Amino acid sequence: MVTKSLPLEALHPVSFNGEDLPLAAYWLELLGPILKTLPSDTSDWLLDLHYCGGKERTLSSVTVLAHCQSLNARLVQNREEILRALKERIPQCNPDQMFNDWLLTLGIIRSSALTQDKCVWMRPSFVDKEKAAKMLEFLDENTPD
Image (cartoon, rainbow, N blue to C red; front, side):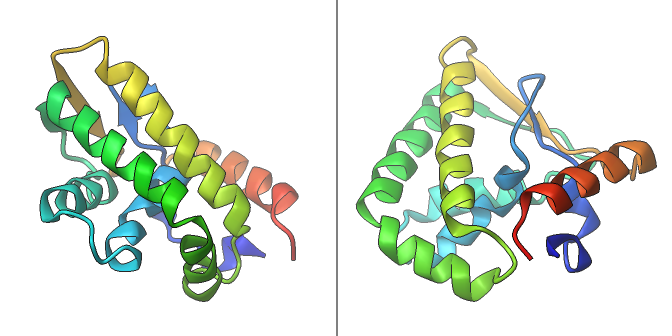
């Protein structure tokens, strides 16, 4: 089961401009090491999405849109490489689902950034036990053993 090795931080969705992102957003930072050709500023932004627990982060929408465009293109171009790397790095995940959730996440971020001058995101730094239990239940039901 995926939940046996899932960090609690991953159970808290990142809130981006007030909208909760898919849980897979927590793992987008893996694209830095997987796609070694990512620009350093894009890798840094992905790390900010990952490590935003309890601290609000901001960036101009223009910059966020540029990161999304670059990442989306690289995801599509390097799909097979990314799927192989996900199988190795997170064996308990469904690589196709994670990949699709990453595309969905970038689409949500892009749509939100188009309506704002500045993007703001954060992940709660506390554990909401009720919400975490629902997330664990969902993950257990939707993840192959």
